[in-house]
Image (cartoon, rainbow, N blue to C red; front, side, top):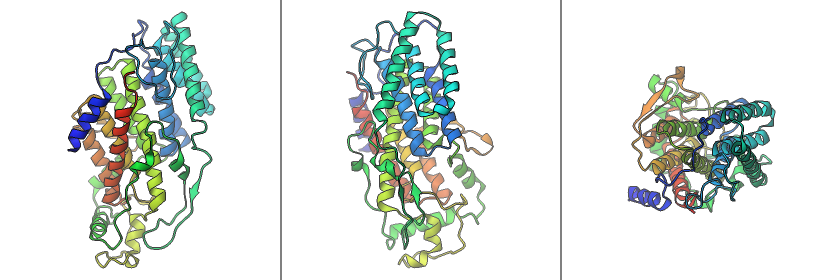
Length: 418
């Protein structure tokens, strides 16, 4: 039934269909989508951005490029806008528009690297050559990018809020920041609250005891398991990396590049993906804030307080990751992002069976891994959180469900043919 629903969603959305692409310039291809996303990745790494802030930046950048290119398409080929509607000037170069839109977003969102962004835009436009089409495209793109930033200025991502440290059985113990994201205005979904799941299993339940036993063994640093550690590290993506949303965007760029998608389809893919990931943040933070569930480290060390006779305490237990975790346990954000991304990619390409090879920012030794499809990678991401002793399996499952739900709504309601 789930597969049938996804197929219906894809057909309704028309994603991956061969809609007429915007007329491609005869000038050289400057690969704006990859080049400017790579610059965003560098900004996220350099500023050590959170996963939430990273997802928001990627969504603004890719929505701007999509809207700039989409606004230059002919009437029958144009799709619904992401954030900024309207038609660009006749004869404008879409590559110039995409590069200029991305530039307009990044110089406003990351002013410290303005010189880098200015130099890249100048190089892109120089490669396209002089002329009215390029000038018009650049002006239009700058207008769109500025409008995207303005449209998100009051979306609730600032000021930063925190949830105070908790106490008692089942409660996350540390203060954590970034909780304002539970109120951030979504990019595409109508009501993020509809995807917030029910509470995690009761501490006294059999389901909880089973998940407890699983992570107590698989995530235990005292039990040597190099393969489990390597899988955890591959997908750990701590501060200083592109964060989980960035890795899935990198995967999308690789697959799109392998298939030589035209500019209009590249921007549609990345806009769909990044808006989905940004909206998944809202649901994930809302869920963590609502239930503030304790992490396995605390749960295992203090199991004598949970009221469950099937859970044995181990005061010396340490996670394979070597840390407790910086936010409430339920749900796994890595899992929600991965469920969302895998669903968007499978929907866009109308198949999950697209093999790819990928190396993450945190891959041990930079060694790549290969996957038969997007769902297989998403499954491994979720398992990696259990292997690292960071999450219970029910939090992986709930996170994946969140992501899939958000993705299906975005696929069936966003960027459709006008």
